[in-house]
Image 1 (cartoon, rainbow, N blue to C red):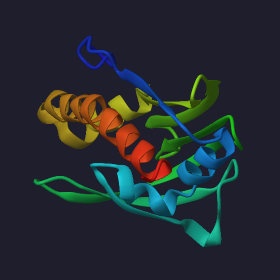
Image 2: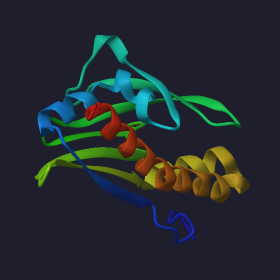
Image 3: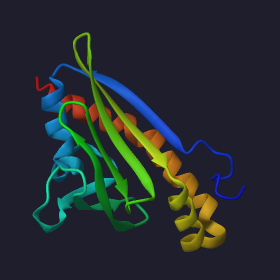
Length: 160
C-alpha cells in the first residue's frame, strides 16, 4: 500500500472536441473565476493578490459536496495560451491540466487529473484510518467530474 493509494489508478483524463479555437478555449479555462460555471465540485475560484493566468500565480478555489465545503490554494505551473493550462492544488498535491489540440471540427480539449505523492501523504496525515476512503472519494470525483466539466465547457463554448 504505502503511498500508492492502495493500488488504485491515481490519474484520469478525458477529451471532447469543441467547435472553437484553441485560444478561445484556453481563455475560458484559464479564467479560473469561471470554473464554478462548469465544474460539478468547484463552486468558485478567485486569483490571489490580483494574479492572473501565468506560471507561478496562485488562486483559491471553494469546493462543495453534499457533505462539506472546503477551500484550496493552487499554483499555475503552465500557462501556454492555446496549448496548455495546468495547476497544482497545494503546490504539490494534485495536478489538474487542460491541453488544446487542433481536431476535425474544432479543438480537442483534454482535461487531466493526477493525484501526486504529496497529496497521498497529506491525506494519510489528515484523515488517518479514513485516508483510503477519502482518496477513493477524490478518485471517483475526478472520474465522474471531468466528463461533466468537459460537457459544460463545450455547451458554454458552443452557444446555440
